[in-house]
Length: 193
Length: 193
Image (cartoon, rainbow over all chains, first blue to last red; front, side):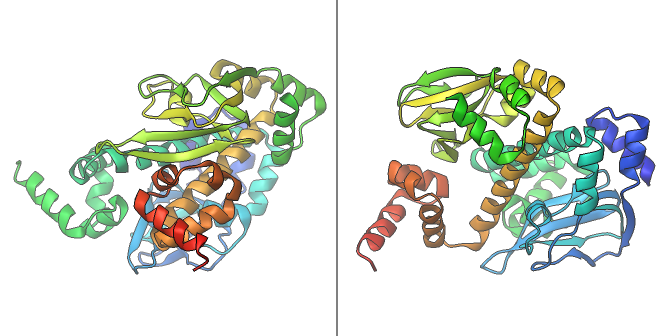
């Protein structure tokens, strides 16, 4: 499991073998079953997690009772509620396993320790957070400039394997479009139209 | 001008006087008149800017021809197109001065130099990017869980001075609600209802 985490980190920055070892030792393993929650609204998020195996969805339940998916996390993704974790305040989010999942978790205390004792970890999270910021900005812009058809097509082109592991309802809750609409687009594509 | 930048940095992290000096020396001053553009769609963003004085809006023109404000930047805020700046690709955004503004700009080359020669700068931007990420997540959640009335009230409570410097149209383009609706809410508030 640690090997996969090391490879993920190496995709972002070069870290010496000893720094990498020291940092990865701060993580603890956790298995979570499908439909179990890693975090519920109202709880303080005590972890940042790396997904070794499985699939999770991070969502918020709006005033209208509908849930909106902020993002999905599959193998090699990181998952947390950044606001709750950073500011140690109750979360407004749910993090639920959509498949049986294996995670590596780091606590806030250990992450702070890493920042102090392994300076390169600052760079790692600066780069990772920057990438997330870029992704969020692109999503905001896509929501404004692309039709629902286009956004659905982009989603399956960008994440073909992920799309197969999700229901229409889950994809709809991520793209902010109706369930029926995703279903209609899928049929159109299946018919090769 | 540099004094204000130094104070802003000190709000995020502690930096030695020499590191602070070295970092701030990488910035260059630039004045920009009201209605001028700091960046236009299609250009590569060559700067990250600190606002010493003035007001700018960062926006995208959607497929429907309507503009959507990603954010406003006033005194003590930072402004850039993170995607275009980081990845040196053409921007999808416009950055326009809404008032005569004074800025301090750093180039990508000098920012990379700072990361190499002043390790604490990694921490500075890790923390700043993290705060932006938290703010973006809060905005996504607010858009789902709060009514337009509520979001408008939040905006003027959080940024009372900024709200006075903006038109209804500009606030509407930020909150994603109609111009008429903002105008109606403003009247309601003015009448103390």
